[in-house]
Length: 178
Length: 252
Image 1 (spheres, each protein chain N blue to C red):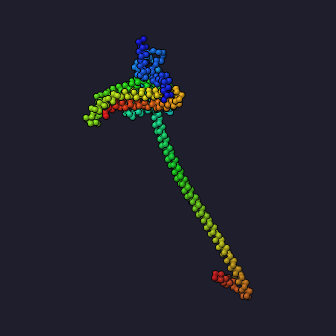
Image 2: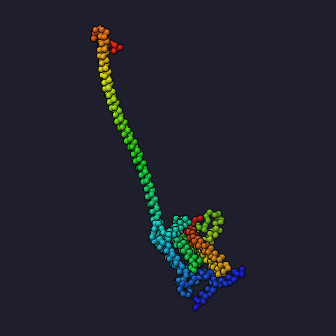
Image 3: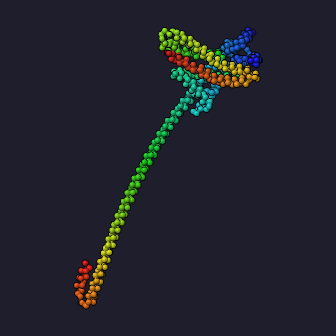
């Protein structure tokens, strides 16, 4: 009965003051439940939530660092690969140039040889031809001489003079030389 | 004026803006003993469940690429962790779980208090006073534990002229002991005022004449209360960090 009256009085005072927060009779209750709540939250945070979040963040940091390192490594590899490629390209180019020069030299040598051979053949042929021409000329000269001697003998005979064959031949030879 | 007076007369007794802060037993009527489950108990319990939902259930997959809930949990962690480290220094990180407990409790009860018809735990001066006194006592004890008598150097401004030092020491001591008062009343006062003003606007809405204005007022006040709910949790936490820094490094 007494508590009920005090409460009624308390409520009356409350509505008069207008602030239920200042009703001291509720303080022990609020403080008790607040203490329970805070201890619960502290236990949940310190035992489960915070270590877990910390681990997740650390793991993420580790993953990011690892990924960055891997990316750096891959980049290094790419640079190396490019260098190797460029080197191979340069090597190939040099090799190609070498082969081209070699082939050119080979062809030049072959060409030179062929030209020399052709020249030699031409020289041989022309020598042969010259020889043939000289022979022909010589035989033609002989024939002309013979014809000239015969003709001269006949002309001299036509003049009625018995000519000496040897003298005529000598005269013709003399003339042909001059 | 007349309409307003009419309205005040009509709704004044019907809607008491402070009634929402009254503690009521959850089950039946009767006096509130220290163990009686009340509406405050209910909303503290809901806060604990919500905290478990966000910080434990939300992070259960421990994903490297976090889900939305996990992101929020990590954000809260990072926010408070950074605050403790920036304000209290590296030595303060040891006390991070305690400060995180405070911040999480205040911000959850603040935001849960914004749900219509709910009960705002942080509007109760008994609750905020306990929080502030907890901070005050533990920080003071920590200061004496770490530095012994040298902790009193906090009140002895060694850069000031010698003649001024005793005066400054008195001012410093007074301001030190006022800390828990301002610390607790700031939080409870802000939360209570916001809720009470919404309730007042709501009582105005009973009159058809000014109902639209009252509704706009409710929406605006609610928006402001959302800000206040966060800012007051932040302010309470950062002040705790500042006091912790004083305990860790008392020299001026």
